[in-house]
Image (cartoon, rainbow, N blue to C red; front, side, top):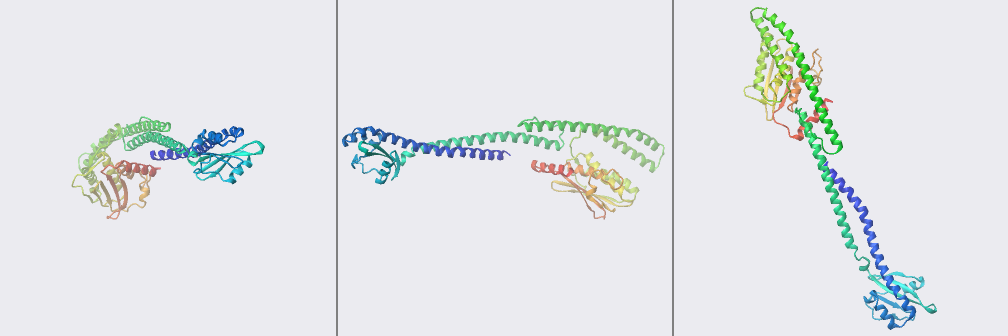
Length: 447
Protein backbone atom coordinates (compact mmCIF):
# COMPACT_ATOMS: atom_id res chain seq x y z
CA UNK A 1 0.00 0.00 0.00
CA UNK A 2 2.84 2.37 0.87
CA UNK A 3 4.54 1.69 -2.44
CA UNK A 4 1.25 2.23 -4.28
CA UNK A 5 0.75 5.63 -2.67
CA UNK A 6 4.31 6.64 -3.61
CA UNK A 7 3.84 5.52 -7.22
CA UNK A 8 0.49 7.32 -7.50
CA UNK A 9 2.00 10.50 -6.08
CA UNK A 10 4.98 10.21 -8.43
CA UNK A 11 2.74 9.73 -11.47
CA UNK A 12 0.34 12.57 -10.60
CA UNK A 13 2.97 15.14 -9.68
CA UNK A 14 5.09 14.22 -12.70
CA UNK A 15 2.15 14.77 -15.05
CA UNK A 16 1.28 18.07 -13.37
CA UNK A 17 4.92 19.21 -13.53
CA UNK A 18 5.18 18.27 -17.21
CA UNK A 19 1.86 20.01 -17.93
CA UNK A 20 3.34 23.27 -16.62
CA UNK A 21 6.99 22.72 -17.55
CA UNK A 22 6.55 22.13 -21.29
CA UNK A 23 4.38 25.22 -22.03
CA UNK A 24 6.51 27.32 -19.72
CA UNK A 25 9.71 26.19 -21.46
CA UNK A 26 8.25 27.07 -24.86
CA UNK A 27 7.13 30.43 -23.52
CA UNK A 28 10.61 31.19 -22.20
CA UNK A 29 12.10 30.41 -25.60
CA UNK A 30 9.63 32.69 -27.36
CA UNK A 31 10.29 35.46 -24.85
CA UNK A 32 14.05 35.22 -25.47
CA UNK A 33 13.48 35.34 -29.24
CA UNK A 34 11.13 38.34 -29.00
CA UNK A 35 13.57 40.12 -26.68
CA UNK A 36 16.46 39.74 -29.16
CA UNK A 37 14.40 40.85 -32.17
CA UNK A 38 12.89 43.78 -30.26
CA UNK A 39 16.33 44.99 -29.26
CA UNK A 40 17.49 44.75 -32.88
CA UNK A 41 14.42 46.64 -34.06
CA UNK A 42 15.00 49.37 -31.50
CA UNK A 43 18.59 49.85 -32.62
CA UNK A 44 17.55 49.89 -36.29
CA UNK A 45 14.89 52.52 -35.55
CA UNK A 46 17.51 54.69 -33.86
CA UNK A 47 19.15 55.30 -37.28
CA UNK A 48 15.91 56.54 -38.84
CA UNK A 49 16.28 60.18 -37.74
CA UNK A 50 19.96 60.20 -38.79
CA UNK A 51 19.08 58.96 -42.29
CA UNK A 52 16.38 61.59 -42.66
CA UNK A 53 18.85 64.38 -41.80
CA UNK A 54 21.89 63.21 -43.77
CA UNK A 55 23.10 60.48 -46.09
CA UNK A 56 26.75 61.36 -45.64
CA UNK A 57 28.69 58.05 -45.44
CA UNK A 58 31.09 59.30 -42.78
CA UNK A 59 28.27 60.55 -40.56
CA UNK A 60 26.34 57.35 -41.06
CA UNK A 61 29.36 55.26 -40.18
CA UNK A 62 29.74 57.17 -36.93
CA UNK A 63 26.06 56.73 -36.17
CA UNK A 64 26.24 52.98 -36.87
CA UNK A 65 29.33 52.60 -34.70
CA UNK A 66 27.57 54.35 -31.81
CA UNK A 67 24.96 51.57 -31.56
CA UNK A 68 25.48 48.24 -29.79
CA UNK A 69 24.85 46.23 -32.94
CA UNK A 70 27.14 48.50 -34.96
CA UNK A 71 29.94 48.13 -32.42
CA UNK A 72 29.52 44.34 -32.72
CA UNK A 73 29.64 44.68 -36.54
CA UNK A 74 26.11 43.40 -36.93
CA UNK A 75 24.51 46.50 -38.51
CA UNK A 76 24.55 47.76 -42.12
CA UNK A 77 22.74 50.55 -43.95
CA UNK A 78 21.69 50.18 -47.59
CA UNK A 79 21.30 53.65 -49.23
CA UNK A 80 19.07 54.24 -52.28
CA UNK A 81 22.12 54.91 -54.50
CA UNK A 82 23.47 51.43 -53.75
CA UNK A 83 26.05 52.40 -51.16
CA UNK A 84 26.48 50.07 -48.14
CA UNK A 85 27.59 51.49 -44.79
CA UNK A 86 29.92 50.47 -43.35
CA UNK A 87 31.81 48.93 -46.22
CA UNK A 88 34.11 46.61 -44.25
CA UNK A 89 31.52 44.14 -42.90
CA UNK A 90 32.04 41.38 -45.44
CA UNK A 91 32.49 38.73 -42.73
CA UNK A 92 28.95 39.17 -41.44
CA UNK A 93 26.03 37.34 -43.06
CA UNK A 94 23.80 39.78 -44.94
CA UNK A 95 20.35 39.80 -46.42
CA UNK A 96 19.88 39.02 -50.05
CA UNK A 97 18.72 41.64 -52.56
CA UNK A 98 15.33 39.98 -52.83
CA UNK A 99 14.87 40.24 -49.06
CA UNK A 100 15.87 43.92 -49.14
CA UNK A 101 13.32 44.53 -51.89
CA UNK A 102 10.64 42.72 -49.89
CA UNK A 103 11.37 44.93 -46.86
CA UNK A 104 11.09 48.10 -49.03
CA UNK A 105 7.85 46.85 -50.55
CA UNK A 106 6.30 46.16 -47.14
CA UNK A 107 7.35 49.52 -45.74
CA UNK A 108 7.85 48.15 -42.23
CA UNK A 109 10.35 46.01 -40.31
CA UNK A 110 10.84 42.57 -41.75
CA UNK A 111 12.74 39.57 -40.34
CA UNK A 112 14.49 37.38 -42.89
CA UNK A 113 16.40 34.19 -42.29
CA UNK A 114 20.11 34.28 -43.13
CA UNK A 115 23.05 31.99 -42.52
CA UNK A 116 23.61 31.54 -38.77
CA UNK A 117 20.61 33.54 -37.64
CA UNK A 118 18.17 36.26 -38.74
CA UNK A 119 18.41 39.71 -40.28
CA UNK A 120 16.05 42.45 -39.13
CA UNK A 121 15.38 44.76 -42.06
CA UNK A 122 14.00 48.20 -41.17
CA UNK A 123 13.03 50.46 -44.18
CA UNK A 124 13.44 54.24 -43.71
CA UNK A 125 11.57 56.64 -46.03
CA UNK A 126 13.65 59.50 -47.44
CA UNK A 127 12.77 62.53 -49.51
CA UNK A 128 11.80 62.13 -53.11
CA UNK A 129 10.12 58.75 -52.50
CA UNK A 130 13.40 57.10 -51.87
CA UNK A 131 13.96 54.46 -49.14
CA UNK A 132 16.98 53.20 -47.24
CA UNK A 133 17.09 49.85 -45.42
CA UNK A 134 18.80 49.31 -42.08
CA UNK A 135 19.91 45.72 -41.47
CA UNK A 136 20.62 44.33 -37.96
CA UNK A 137 22.03 40.82 -37.83
CA UNK A 138 20.76 38.64 -34.94
CA UNK A 139 22.69 35.36 -34.51
CA UNK A 140 20.97 32.22 -33.26
CA UNK A 141 22.84 32.48 -29.95
CA UNK A 142 21.05 35.74 -29.12
CA UNK A 143 17.67 34.16 -29.87
CA UNK A 144 18.26 31.44 -27.25
CA UNK A 145 20.29 33.42 -24.77
CA UNK A 146 19.37 32.33 -21.20
CA UNK A 147 16.87 29.73 -22.43
CA UNK A 148 18.89 26.66 -21.43
CA UNK A 149 19.65 28.11 -18.03
CA UNK A 150 15.98 28.84 -17.47
CA UNK A 151 15.06 25.33 -18.59
CA UNK A 152 17.59 23.78 -16.18
CA UNK A 153 16.26 25.88 -13.30
CA UNK A 154 12.65 24.98 -14.08
CA UNK A 155 13.56 21.29 -14.38
CA UNK A 156 15.30 21.38 -11.01
CA UNK A 157 12.31 23.11 -9.42
CA UNK A 158 9.94 20.54 -10.95
CA UNK A 159 12.16 17.67 -9.76
CA UNK A 160 12.25 19.16 -6.26
CA UNK A 161 8.45 19.46 -6.22
CA UNK A 162 8.05 15.86 -7.40
CA UNK A 163 10.56 14.62 -4.83
CA UNK A 164 8.81 16.59 -2.10
CA UNK A 165 5.40 15.21 -3.01
CA UNK A 166 6.80 11.66 -3.10
CA UNK A 167 8.39 12.15 0.32
CA UNK A 168 5.12 13.47 1.75
CA UNK A 169 3.20 10.56 0.20
CA UNK A 170 5.73 8.12 1.64
CA UNK A 171 5.35 9.58 5.12
CA UNK A 172 1.56 9.52 4.87
CA UNK A 173 1.70 5.96 3.56
CA UNK A 174 4.00 4.93 6.40
CA UNK A 175 1.54 6.38 8.90
CA UNK A 176 -1.35 4.52 7.31
CA UNK A 177 0.69 1.31 7.13
CA UNK A 178 1.68 1.53 10.79
CA UNK A 179 -1.92 2.02 11.86
CA UNK A 180 -3.12 -0.78 9.57
CA UNK A 181 -0.40 -3.16 10.75
CA UNK A 182 -1.25 -2.50 14.40
CA UNK A 183 -4.90 -3.19 13.68
CA UNK A 184 -4.01 -6.41 11.80
CA UNK A 185 -1.70 -7.59 14.59
CA UNK A 186 -4.37 -6.89 17.19
CA UNK A 187 -6.96 -8.77 15.15
CA UNK A 188 -4.55 -11.69 14.71
CA UNK A 189 -3.77 -11.80 18.44
CA UNK A 190 -7.48 -11.61 19.25
CA UNK A 191 -8.17 -14.43 16.83
CA UNK A 192 -5.43 -16.51 18.48
CA UNK A 193 -7.15 -16.24 21.84
CA UNK A 194 -5.72 -13.11 23.48
CA UNK A 195 -9.01 -11.51 24.46
CA UNK A 196 -7.33 -8.71 26.39
CA UNK A 197 -5.71 -7.13 23.32
CA UNK A 198 -6.87 -3.61 22.48
CA UNK A 199 -5.45 -0.92 20.23
CA UNK A 200 -4.97 2.82 20.52
CA UNK A 201 -6.78 4.17 17.42
CA UNK A 202 -4.40 6.14 15.24
CA UNK A 203 -3.95 7.15 11.61
CA UNK A 204 -6.54 8.42 9.13
CA UNK A 205 -10.12 8.96 10.32
CA UNK A 206 -11.30 5.75 8.65
CA UNK A 207 -8.69 3.66 10.48
CA UNK A 208 -9.50 5.42 13.74
CA UNK A 209 -13.13 4.42 13.27
CA UNK A 210 -12.04 0.86 12.48
CA UNK A 211 -9.90 0.79 15.64
CA UNK A 212 -12.77 2.07 17.78
CA UNK A 213 -15.06 -0.54 16.21
CA UNK A 214 -12.49 -3.27 16.89
CA UNK A 215 -12.23 -2.30 20.55
CA UNK A 216 -16.02 -2.23 20.86
CA UNK A 217 -16.28 -5.62 19.16
CA UNK A 218 -13.60 -7.09 21.44
CA UNK A 219 -15.38 -5.80 24.56
CA UNK A 220 -18.66 -7.21 23.30
CA UNK A 221 -17.09 -10.60 22.55
CA UNK A 222 -15.56 -10.72 26.04
CA UNK A 223 -18.95 -9.92 27.55
CA UNK A 224 -20.63 -12.62 25.48
CA UNK A 225 -18.01 -15.18 26.44
CA UNK A 226 -18.33 -14.24 30.09
CA UNK A 227 -22.09 -14.61 29.87
CA UNK A 228 -21.67 -17.96 28.12
CA UNK A 229 -19.27 -19.18 30.80
CA UNK A 230 -21.65 -18.12 33.52
CA UNK A 231 -24.53 -19.86 31.80
CA UNK A 232 -22.50 -23.05 31.31
CA UNK A 233 -21.40 -22.93 34.93
CA UNK A 234 -24.98 -22.45 36.10
CA UNK A 235 -26.24 -25.30 33.93
CA UNK A 236 -23.43 -27.55 35.13
CA UNK A 237 -24.15 -26.60 38.74
CA UNK A 238 -27.76 -27.62 38.27
CA UNK A 239 -26.55 -31.13 37.53
CA UNK A 240 -25.40 -31.51 41.12
CA UNK A 241 -28.97 -32.16 42.32
CA UNK A 242 -29.65 -35.15 40.05
CA UNK A 243 -26.07 -36.31 40.66
CA UNK A 244 -26.69 -36.28 44.41
CA UNK A 245 -29.83 -38.38 43.91
CA UNK A 246 -27.92 -40.72 41.60
CA UNK A 247 -25.16 -41.12 44.19
CA UNK A 248 -27.70 -41.99 46.91
CA UNK A 249 -29.23 -44.60 44.64
CA UNK A 250 -25.79 -46.00 43.83
CA UNK A 251 -24.90 -46.24 47.54
CA UNK A 252 -28.14 -48.16 48.13
CA UNK A 253 -27.17 -50.84 45.62
CA UNK A 254 -24.95 -52.62 48.13
CA UNK A 255 -21.71 -54.37 47.24
CA UNK A 256 -20.67 -56.15 44.08
CA UNK A 257 -18.95 -55.53 40.74
CA UNK A 258 -21.91 -53.76 39.14
CA UNK A 259 -22.63 -51.41 42.08
CA UNK A 260 -18.93 -50.62 42.36
CA UNK A 261 -18.74 -49.76 38.65
CA UNK A 262 -21.88 -47.62 38.98
CA UNK A 263 -20.41 -45.70 41.93
CA UNK A 264 -17.14 -45.23 40.04
CA UNK A 265 -19.04 -43.89 37.03
CA UNK A 266 -20.94 -41.48 39.30
CA UNK A 267 -17.65 -40.31 40.82
CA UNK A 268 -16.17 -39.71 37.38
CA UNK A 269 -19.29 -37.88 36.25
CA UNK A 270 -19.19 -35.65 39.32
CA UNK A 271 -15.49 -35.00 38.71
CA UNK A 272 -16.20 -33.98 35.12
CA UNK A 273 -19.01 -31.65 36.22
CA UNK A 274 -16.70 -30.02 38.77
CA UNK A 275 -14.02 -29.66 36.08
CA UNK A 276 -16.52 -27.99 33.74
CA UNK A 277 -17.58 -25.54 36.45
CA UNK A 278 -13.98 -24.64 37.29
CA UNK A 279 -13.09 -24.25 33.61
CA UNK A 280 -15.96 -21.99 32.65
CA UNK A 281 -15.68 -19.84 35.77
CA UNK A 282 -12.23 -18.58 34.76
CA UNK A 283 -11.08 -17.25 31.38
CA UNK A 284 -9.63 -19.90 29.14
CA UNK A 285 -5.83 -19.91 29.15
CA UNK A 286 -3.73 -21.61 26.58
CA UNK A 287 -1.41 -24.29 27.82
CA UNK A 288 0.25 -27.52 26.81
CA UNK A 289 -0.07 -31.18 27.61
CA UNK A 290 1.48 -34.57 26.97
CA UNK A 291 -0.74 -36.18 24.36
CA UNK A 292 0.57 -39.66 25.18
CA UNK A 293 -0.38 -39.29 28.83
CA UNK A 294 -3.83 -37.88 28.03
CA UNK A 295 -4.54 -40.68 25.55
CA UNK A 296 -3.40 -43.35 27.99
CA UNK A 297 -5.74 -41.94 30.65
CA UNK A 298 -8.77 -41.65 28.35
CA UNK A 299 -8.29 -45.06 26.72
CA UNK A 300 -7.98 -46.61 30.19
CA UNK A 301 -11.25 -44.92 31.15
CA UNK A 302 -13.13 -46.14 28.08
CA UNK A 303 -11.56 -49.62 28.18
CA UNK A 304 -13.72 -50.51 31.17
CA UNK A 305 -16.88 -49.92 29.14
CA UNK A 306 -15.28 -51.61 26.13
CA UNK A 307 -14.61 -54.72 28.18
CA UNK A 308 -18.26 -54.84 29.29
CA UNK A 309 -19.43 -54.60 25.66
CA UNK A 310 -16.90 -57.10 24.35
CA UNK A 311 -14.95 -54.55 22.30
CA UNK A 312 -11.23 -54.86 21.69
CA UNK A 313 -9.37 -51.58 22.04
CA UNK A 314 -5.75 -50.73 21.35
CA UNK A 315 -3.54 -47.70 21.97
CA UNK A 316 -0.69 -47.38 19.47
CA UNK A 317 2.30 -45.03 19.50
CA UNK A 318 1.86 -43.59 23.01
CA UNK A 319 5.10 -45.03 24.35
CA UNK A 320 6.93 -41.69 24.46
CA UNK A 321 5.94 -38.12 25.40
CA UNK A 322 4.29 -35.93 22.74
CA UNK A 323 3.89 -32.28 23.70
CA UNK A 324 0.89 -30.44 22.27
CA UNK A 325 0.18 -26.66 22.52
CA UNK A 326 -3.26 -27.46 23.91
CA UNK A 327 -4.61 -27.76 27.47
CA UNK A 328 -5.02 -31.33 28.60
CA UNK A 329 -8.70 -30.80 29.39
CA UNK A 330 -9.44 -29.72 25.80
CA UNK A 331 -7.57 -32.66 24.32
CA UNK A 332 -9.34 -35.04 26.70
CA UNK A 333 -12.72 -33.57 25.73
CA UNK A 334 -11.91 -34.04 22.03
CA UNK A 335 -10.77 -37.65 22.52
CA UNK A 336 -13.82 -38.41 24.67
CA UNK A 337 -16.07 -37.00 21.97
CA UNK A 338 -14.56 -39.29 19.33
CA UNK A 339 -14.53 -42.40 21.52
CA UNK A 340 -18.05 -41.63 22.68
CA UNK A 341 -19.14 -41.61 19.04
CA UNK A 342 -17.59 -45.07 18.60
CA UNK A 343 -19.63 -46.47 21.47
CA UNK A 344 -22.76 -44.60 20.41
CA UNK A 345 -22.86 -45.37 16.70
CA UNK A 346 -21.33 -48.84 16.47
CA UNK A 347 -22.75 -52.09 17.76
CA UNK A 348 -21.38 -53.97 20.76
CA UNK A 349 -18.30 -56.02 20.01
CA UNK A 350 -16.98 -53.54 17.41
CA UNK A 351 -13.24 -53.08 17.80
CA UNK A 352 -11.52 -49.69 17.80
CA UNK A 353 -7.95 -48.36 17.98
CA UNK A 354 -6.34 -45.06 18.95
CA UNK A 355 -3.04 -44.17 17.27
CA UNK A 356 -0.65 -41.38 18.21
CA UNK A 357 1.57 -40.19 15.37
CA UNK A 358 4.35 -37.68 16.09
CA UNK A 359 5.81 -35.98 13.03
CA UNK A 360 7.95 -32.93 12.29
CA UNK A 361 5.92 -29.94 13.36
CA UNK A 362 2.65 -31.90 13.56
CA UNK A 363 1.10 -34.51 15.81
CA UNK A 364 -1.80 -36.69 14.78
CA UNK A 365 -4.36 -38.64 16.81
CA UNK A 366 -6.23 -41.25 14.76
CA UNK A 367 -9.37 -42.92 16.12
CA UNK A 368 -10.40 -45.89 13.96
CA UNK A 369 -13.19 -48.42 14.35
CA UNK A 370 -14.55 -51.47 12.59
CA UNK A 371 -18.09 -50.13 12.31
CA UNK A 372 -20.14 -49.15 9.26
CA UNK A 373 -18.21 -45.93 8.69
CA UNK A 374 -19.49 -42.41 7.95
CA UNK A 375 -21.44 -42.01 4.72
CA UNK A 376 -21.00 -38.23 4.35
CA UNK A 377 -17.77 -37.06 6.07
CA UNK A 378 -18.20 -33.44 4.93
CA UNK A 379 -21.67 -33.13 6.43
CA UNK A 380 -20.54 -34.87 9.61
CA UNK A 381 -17.94 -32.16 10.24
CA UNK A 382 -20.53 -29.39 10.10
CA UNK A 383 -21.44 -28.04 13.49
CA UNK A 384 -24.83 -29.18 14.76
CA UNK A 385 -25.40 -31.64 11.88
CA UNK A 386 -26.21 -35.21 12.85
CA UNK A 387 -28.33 -37.96 11.41
CA UNK A 388 -28.22 -40.13 14.51
CA UNK A 389 -30.44 -38.09 16.81
CA UNK A 390 -27.57 -36.47 18.75
CA UNK A 391 -26.53 -32.84 19.09
CA UNK A 392 -24.01 -33.19 16.28
CA UNK A 393 -21.29 -31.41 18.28
CA UNK A 394 -18.94 -34.33 18.95
CA UNK A 395 -16.86 -34.00 15.80
CA UNK A 396 -17.03 -30.22 16.07
CA UNK A 397 -15.35 -30.38 19.49
CA UNK A 398 -12.49 -32.33 17.93
CA UNK A 399 -12.32 -29.95 14.97
CA UNK A 400 -12.15 -26.86 17.14
CA UNK A 401 -9.42 -28.38 19.29
CA UNK A 402 -7.31 -29.15 16.21
CA UNK A 403 -7.92 -25.78 14.55
CA UNK A 404 -6.94 -23.90 17.71
CA UNK A 405 -3.36 -25.00 17.00
CA UNK A 406 -3.59 -24.39 13.24
CA UNK A 407 -4.45 -28.02 12.47
CA UNK A 408 -7.48 -29.75 11.02
CA UNK A 409 -9.72 -32.83 11.20
CA UNK A 410 -10.23 -35.36 8.40
CA UNK A 411 -12.45 -38.43 8.08
CA UNK A 412 -11.28 -41.46 6.08
CA UNK A 413 -11.93 -45.17 5.83
CA UNK A 414 -9.93 -47.10 8.44
CA UNK A 415 -7.97 -50.31 7.96
CA UNK A 416 -10.44 -51.93 10.38
CA UNK A 417 -13.18 -51.36 7.84
CA UNK A 418 -15.03 -48.51 9.51
CA UNK A 419 -14.40 -44.79 9.99
CA UNK A 420 -11.11 -43.20 10.90
CA UNK A 421 -11.21 -39.69 12.37
CA UNK A 422 -7.85 -37.93 12.16
CA UNK A 423 -7.01 -34.96 14.37
CA UNK A 424 -3.84 -33.19 13.27
CA UNK A 425 -2.30 -30.60 15.60
CA UNK A 426 0.48 -28.17 14.77
CA UNK A 427 3.31 -28.17 17.28
CA UNK A 428 5.14 -25.24 15.66
CA UNK A 429 3.79 -21.72 15.43
CA UNK A 430 2.97 -20.44 11.96
CA UNK A 431 4.72 -17.35 10.53
CA UNK A 432 2.55 -14.21 10.77
CA UNK A 433 1.71 -14.16 7.04
CA UNK A 434 0.68 -17.83 6.95
CA UNK A 435 -1.22 -17.45 10.18
CA UNK A 436 -3.19 -14.54 8.72
CA UNK A 437 -4.07 -16.57 5.62
CA UNK A 438 -5.13 -19.45 7.82
CA UNK A 439 -7.39 -17.15 9.84
CA UNK A 440 -8.88 -15.72 6.64
CA UNK A 441 -9.54 -19.20 5.26
CA UNK A 442 -11.12 -20.22 8.54
CA UNK A 443 -13.44 -17.23 8.50
CA UNK A 444 -14.44 -17.91 4.90
CA UNK A 445 -15.13 -21.56 5.67
CA UNK A 446 -17.49 -20.57 8.46
CA UNK A 447 -19.47 -18.06 6.43
